[in-house]
Amino acid sequence: MAKSCVLVIIVFATIMFSTFSVLSAFQYKVGDADGWHQPDDNNREMYETWAGNINFHINDSLLFVYKNDSAIEVSKPDYYHCNETSGSVAPKDGSTLFTLDKPGFYYFISGNLDHCNRGQRLMIEVPDPASKSKTNAANSVLSVLGFGMWCVHLMLLLI
Ligand SMILES: *[C@@H]1O[C@H](CO)[C@@H](O)[C@H](O)[C@H]1NC(C)=O
Ligand SMILES: *[C@@H]1O[C@H](CO)[C@@H](O)[C@H](O)[C@H]1NC(C)=O
Ligand SMILES: *[C@@H]1O[C@H](CO)[C@@H](O)[C@H](O)[C@H]1NC(C)=O
Image: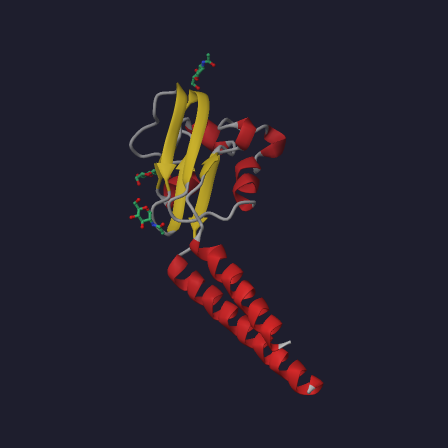
Protein backbone atom coordinates (compact mmCIF):
# COMPACT_ATOMS: atom_id res chain seq x y z
CA MET A 1 0.00 0.00 0.00
CA ALA A 2 2.74 2.45 1.01
CA LYS A 3 4.70 1.67 -2.14
CA SER A 4 1.76 2.21 -4.46
CA CYS A 5 0.98 5.47 -2.68
CA VAL A 6 4.50 6.72 -3.30
CA LEU A 7 4.36 5.59 -6.91
CA VAL A 8 1.05 7.30 -7.55
CA ILE A 9 2.34 10.50 -5.95
CA ILE A 10 5.46 10.49 -8.11
CA VAL A 11 3.51 9.90 -11.32
CA PHE A 12 0.96 12.55 -10.38
CA ALA A 13 3.63 15.12 -9.49
CA THR A 14 5.51 14.47 -12.73
CA ILE A 15 2.38 15.03 -14.80
CA MET A 16 1.50 18.22 -12.93
CA PHE A 17 4.93 19.75 -13.30
CA SER A 18 5.50 18.75 -16.91
CA THR A 19 2.21 20.22 -18.14
CA PHE A 20 3.39 23.75 -17.61
CA SER A 21 7.11 23.42 -18.28
CA VAL A 22 6.71 21.79 -21.71
CA LEU A 23 4.51 24.49 -23.22
CA SER A 24 6.22 25.11 -26.52
CA ALA A 25 5.53 28.03 -28.83
CA PHE A 26 2.71 27.56 -31.30
CA GLN A 27 1.87 29.32 -34.55
CA TYR A 28 -1.81 30.16 -35.03
CA LYS A 29 -3.34 31.02 -38.36
CA VAL A 30 -5.75 33.85 -37.61
CA GLY A 31 -9.32 32.82 -38.43
CA ASP A 32 -8.09 29.29 -39.19
CA ALA A 33 -9.30 28.25 -42.64
CA ASP A 34 -11.22 31.54 -43.04
CA GLY A 35 -8.06 33.60 -42.88
CA TRP A 36 -7.99 37.36 -42.41
CA HIS A 37 -10.75 39.25 -44.20
CA GLN A 38 -13.67 41.54 -43.55
CA PRO A 39 -16.25 39.49 -41.59
CA ASP A 40 -19.76 39.04 -42.91
CA ASP A 41 -22.13 41.62 -41.47
CA ASN A 42 -23.91 38.94 -39.45
CA ASN A 43 -20.64 37.64 -38.02
CA ARG A 44 -18.70 40.75 -37.05
CA GLU A 45 -17.42 39.10 -33.89
CA MET A 46 -15.68 36.31 -35.77
CA TYR A 47 -12.13 37.24 -34.70
CA GLU A 48 -13.18 37.87 -31.11
CA THR A 49 -14.78 34.42 -31.08
CA TRP A 50 -11.73 32.88 -32.70
CA ALA A 51 -9.33 34.37 -30.14
CA GLY A 52 -11.68 33.52 -27.26
CA ASN A 53 -11.13 29.82 -27.86
CA ILE A 54 -7.35 29.97 -27.52
CA ASN A 55 -5.03 30.32 -24.55
CA PHE A 56 -2.07 32.27 -25.89
CA HIS A 57 1.41 31.94 -24.42
CA ILE A 58 4.60 33.91 -24.74
CA ASN A 59 6.42 33.19 -28.02
CA ASP A 60 3.31 31.94 -29.77
CA SER A 61 2.89 33.63 -33.12
CA LEU A 62 0.01 34.81 -35.27
CA LEU A 63 -0.04 34.33 -39.01
CA PHE A 64 -2.40 36.64 -40.89
CA VAL A 65 -3.17 35.39 -44.39
CA TYR A 66 -5.10 37.79 -46.62
CA LYS A 67 -6.01 38.83 -50.13
CA ASN A 68 -6.10 42.49 -51.15
CA ASP A 69 -5.83 43.44 -47.49
CA SER A 70 -3.25 43.92 -44.72
CA ALA A 71 -2.64 43.33 -41.03
CA ILE A 72 -1.05 45.92 -38.78
CA GLU A 73 -0.36 46.09 -35.07
CA VAL A 74 -1.77 49.24 -33.47
CA SER A 75 -2.28 50.85 -30.09
CA LYS A 76 -5.36 50.24 -27.97
CA PRO A 77 -7.11 53.53 -28.96
CA ASP A 78 -6.35 52.91 -32.63
CA TYR A 79 -7.86 49.45 -32.24
CA TYR A 80 -11.07 50.77 -30.67
CA HIS A 81 -11.41 53.68 -33.09
CA CYS A 82 -10.00 51.87 -36.12
CA ASN A 83 -7.73 54.85 -36.26
CA GLU A 84 -4.43 53.95 -37.85
CA THR A 85 -2.57 57.24 -37.50
CA SER A 86 0.35 56.39 -39.77
CA GLY A 87 -2.11 56.12 -42.63
CA SER A 88 -3.72 53.00 -44.01
CA VAL A 89 -1.45 50.43 -45.50
CA ALA A 90 -1.76 49.62 -49.20
CA PRO A 91 -3.79 46.43 -49.68
CA LYS A 92 -1.94 43.43 -51.02
CA ASP A 93 -2.04 39.65 -51.19
CA GLY A 94 0.13 37.94 -48.68
CA SER A 95 0.76 37.09 -45.09
CA THR A 96 2.21 38.73 -42.01
CA LEU A 97 3.64 36.98 -38.97
CA PHE A 98 3.68 38.54 -35.51
CA THR A 99 5.35 36.92 -32.51
CA LEU A 100 3.75 37.44 -29.11
CA ASP A 101 7.09 37.82 -27.37
CA LYS A 102 5.97 39.36 -24.09
CA PRO A 103 2.94 39.27 -21.81
CA GLY A 104 0.20 41.84 -22.28
CA PHE A 105 -2.35 42.96 -24.83
CA TYR A 106 -1.83 43.03 -28.59
CA TYR A 107 -4.08 44.87 -31.03
CA PHE A 108 -4.30 44.17 -34.75
CA ILE A 109 -6.48 45.74 -37.41
CA SER A 110 -6.86 45.65 -41.14
CA GLY A 111 -5.04 48.55 -42.80
CA ASN A 112 -8.32 49.11 -44.59
CA LEU A 113 -10.16 51.19 -41.98
CA ASP A 114 -13.55 50.39 -43.46
CA HIS A 115 -12.81 46.67 -42.99
CA CYS A 116 -11.67 47.39 -39.44
CA ASN A 117 -14.91 49.22 -38.67
CA ARG A 118 -16.80 46.18 -39.92
CA GLY A 119 -15.07 43.89 -37.43
CA GLN A 120 -11.78 42.97 -39.06
CA ARG A 121 -9.73 43.47 -35.93
CA LEU A 122 -8.21 41.26 -33.30
CA MET A 123 -7.27 41.74 -29.66
CA ILE A 124 -5.05 39.18 -27.96
CA GLU A 125 -4.06 38.84 -24.33
CA VAL A 126 -0.93 36.96 -23.39
CA PRO A 127 -1.02 36.26 -19.65
CA ASP A 128 2.06 36.89 -17.57
CA PRO A 129 3.54 33.47 -16.76
CA ALA A 130 5.24 34.85 -13.65
CA SER A 131 1.91 35.30 -11.87
CA LYS A 132 0.19 32.31 -13.43
CA SER A 133 2.77 29.55 -13.00
CA LYS A 134 3.26 30.44 -9.37
CA THR A 135 -0.40 29.73 -8.72
CA ASN A 136 -0.24 26.56 -10.81
CA ALA A 137 2.85 25.37 -8.98
CA ALA A 138 1.28 26.13 -5.62
CA ASN A 139 -1.89 24.28 -6.60
CA SER A 140 0.09 21.25 -7.77
CA VAL A 141 2.10 21.11 -4.58
CA LEU A 142 -1.10 21.39 -2.58
CA SER A 143 -2.85 18.61 -4.48
CA VAL A 144 0.19 16.32 -4.21
CA LEU A 145 0.40 17.04 -0.49
CA GLY A 146 -3.33 16.49 -0.16
CA PHE A 147 -3.10 13.14 -1.88
CA GLY A 148 -0.15 12.13 0.30
CA MET A 149 -2.16 12.96 3.42
CA TRP A 150 -5.06 10.92 2.12
CA CYS A 151 -2.73 7.96 1.45
CA VAL A 152 -1.24 8.14 4.93
CA HIS A 153 -4.70 8.37 6.42
CA LEU A 154 -5.82 5.31 4.46
CA MET A 155 -2.77 3.33 5.58
CA LEU A 156 -3.40 4.20 9.20
CA LEU A 157 -6.98 2.97 8.85
CA LEU A 158 -5.80 -0.30 7.34
CA ILE A 159 -3.17 -1.08 9.96
C1 LIG B 1 10.85 33.22 -25.98
O1 LIG B 1 11.83 33.13 -27.00
C2 LIG B 1 13.04 33.78 -26.66
C3 LIG B 1 13.94 33.74 -27.89
O2 LIG B 1 13.91 32.48 -28.50
C4 LIG B 1 13.66 33.09 -25.45
O3 LIG B 1 14.86 33.73 -25.09
C5 LIG B 1 12.67 33.16 -24.29
O4 LIG B 1 13.17 32.45 -23.18
C6 LIG B 1 11.33 32.58 -24.69
N1 LIG B 1 10.37 32.81 -23.62
C7 LIG B 1 9.55 31.86 -23.16
C8 LIG B 1 8.65 32.24 -22.02
O5 LIG B 1 9.50 30.72 -23.64
C1 LIG C 1 -8.74 45.83 -53.34
O1 LIG C 1 -9.04 46.72 -52.26
C2 LIG C 1 -9.24 48.05 -52.67
C3 LIG C 1 -9.42 48.89 -51.40
O2 LIG C 1 -10.33 48.28 -50.51
C4 LIG C 1 -10.47 48.12 -53.58
O3 LIG C 1 -10.68 49.44 -53.98
C5 LIG C 1 -10.22 47.20 -54.78
O4 LIG C 1 -11.39 47.17 -55.57
C6 LIG C 1 -9.88 45.79 -54.33
N1 LIG C 1 -9.49 44.99 -55.48
C7 LIG C 1 -9.94 43.76 -55.64
C8 LIG C 1 -9.43 43.06 -56.86
O5 LIG C 1 -10.75 43.22 -54.88
C1 LIG D 1 -6.93 59.50 -34.71
O1 LIG D 1 -5.73 59.68 -33.99
C2 LIG D 1 -5.14 60.95 -34.13
C3 LIG D 1 -3.84 60.98 -33.36
O2 LIG D 1 -3.94 60.30 -32.15
C4 LIG D 1 -6.13 62.03 -33.66
O3 LIG D 1 -5.56 63.30 -33.89
C5 LIG D 1 -7.43 61.90 -34.42
O4 LIG D 1 -8.37 62.80 -33.91
C6 LIG D 1 -7.97 60.49 -34.29
N1 LIG D 1 -9.19 60.36 -35.08
C7 LIG D 1 -10.24 59.71 -34.64
C8 LIG D 1 -11.39 59.63 -35.60
O5 LIG D 1 -10.31 59.20 -33.53
